[in-house]
Length: 230
Image (cartoon, rainbow, N blue to C red):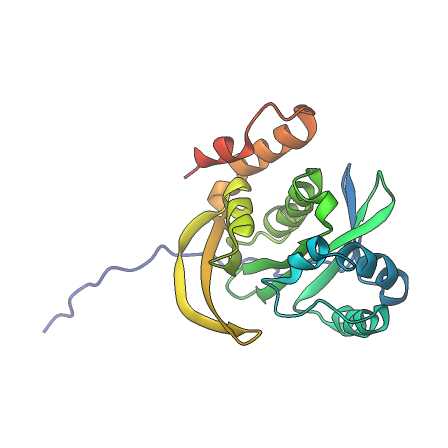
């Protein structure tokens, strides 16, 4: 008896070489992403994320923080500096010459040619500026342009409306909610999943470059531009 032919996914050619994100400086016009340096970074990172209710609110949806002292944060940064997955970076703001937050590559699956962007946080006075847009842009350039990945993921607590809006604004597509996915700080977390594919990156890249570097007064809406990409 002949076997019935079942549907199969498209054939994917194996790349000649598969690499991981570089632990190096990523330099943009507004920021520099640098590998974590606990001794140099701790004081400024602690100051920008502690000392007021507004600053410490940013830790609400993180699995760690706030920290009870600079010393505690420095010890935490020492562990982050040793980690390769997640691979952490400190965000340096060129204009103010301050360290203003952190980002990371994580869940790096080279065999599947995908990874995630996460552990993203910034000082409150930097939020809603060029900083996060350029940080994610630099990371996506590394991910798609150099590593030739097929997929980038963005995940957050489903209640974290600011992160969810940022994902859509930056061109990530909503995929769904993983219910009762995690327990974070003793509380339930339903996780919202977003992704960007290599086939979508060309359009997203053009839109982000236009918004960052060709529209200084930000008359354009990046959310609107990227909403047209499917």
